[in-house]
Amino acid sequence: MDLFEYSLQKRGTQDAPLAARMRPTTLEEFVGQEQIVGKDKLLYRAIKGDRLGSLIFYGPPGTGKTTLAKIIANTTKSEFVQINATTAGIKDIKDTVTAAKERLGMFGKKTILFIDEIHRFNKTQQDTLLPHVEDGTLVLIGATTENPYFEVNRALVSRSVIFSLEPLRQKDIASLLRRALADEEKGLGSYHAKMDEDALDFLSNTANGDARAALNALELAVLTTDPDDDGMIHITLSVAEDCIQRRALQYDKGGDNHYDTISAFIKSMRGSDPTRRCIIWQK
Image 1: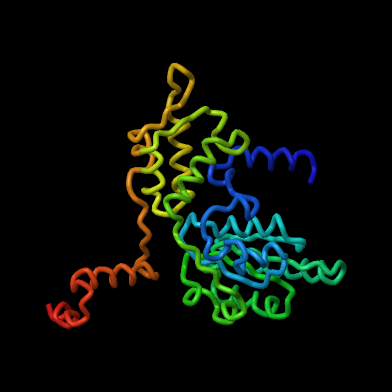
Image 2 (image 1 turned 180 degrees about the vertical axis):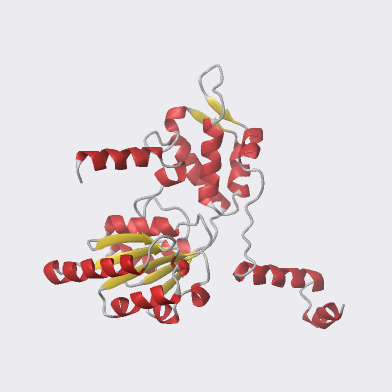
């Protein structure tokens, strides 16, 4: 990397949205998802021991899928390569495989390939990956908001461990917001902003488990609010409401959320009494 590339990369990091700047780089900084990355859990042990096999992170936006991949990139001794399925094609896969084979043959170094939005790859693209995951040329890490059992090649799924990420709890998002307000290097600490507790509760609740949505709203609130006479930026409930105006609902008419919503609706109508099911459908 030359001086120009370094300067461009550094500027890009500084200009990145708050959610990107505040992305944790270690497991110790990661918040939430204790069911999979809690101390002594399988994924925690695999990352700490640098003994990862192919895996797929599945969950709603803003729950830490890409963050976990970045943490792996920062801790592994393997070469870490990232592509996005929305822009990459078969040529990108083949180029990655060629470089991985050379790396493995010359230096004995493994390659971890992280594919964001892996469900965007079509069947042919996913089939191209399969033999190289099978023979160990690549260790695959996929991230998807769609159910991998429906959207990802069955052969790839069978060779991967699926980790399901849940929407973050309100207290987890509140912790991230406080961290962003205090961090002077990557966060908003240099703006000398303070947030009322009711505003914090509102943002952390309205984000509906999406840390990215909450952090984006906080950044908007701080950057668009004038300082008080004492030089402090005061984020009130009214300001918070302006910056995230409605609860971010997770719904996809073709995915799991569609059927979960239907199921919840039916259960609410029959009061969870299975004997009333036929009566409802008759109406």
